[in-house]
Picture (cartoon, rainbow, N blue to C red):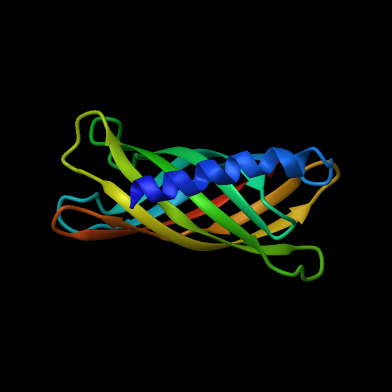
Length: 171
């Protein structure tokens, strides 16, 4: 399944330069912060609240749909540095832009990725499926985004739910 998704992603990347040459659709890059609430089960991930940073590059296929690649790093720090759990969260997503309302454009984002603990941790993490909703507000030359993107982390014997809320800027 992972190989099929990567193949679709690579095909979409090769289709993008032809559209980008017209000058009407160009790649977008975003950076932001996220707050994560984890409802863990067993050894998949710890319960708690984490803070993180995230980056994403999106490659428009047309005016309504984009394919994106992103990654984030988060830390569950409320127990202090010694008991903290740090995560790496890569994602490949499809982004469907919905009709705008007033000054905000809405979009659906969904795909797959993973939550992988870094360093020494009892948590094992695992692959994840995500589906969320976001809002974008155009500024002068960039855009502000707000996004809620729940993920289901699939462990070896159990699953966990992580609900990130993200805020950032798209260039």
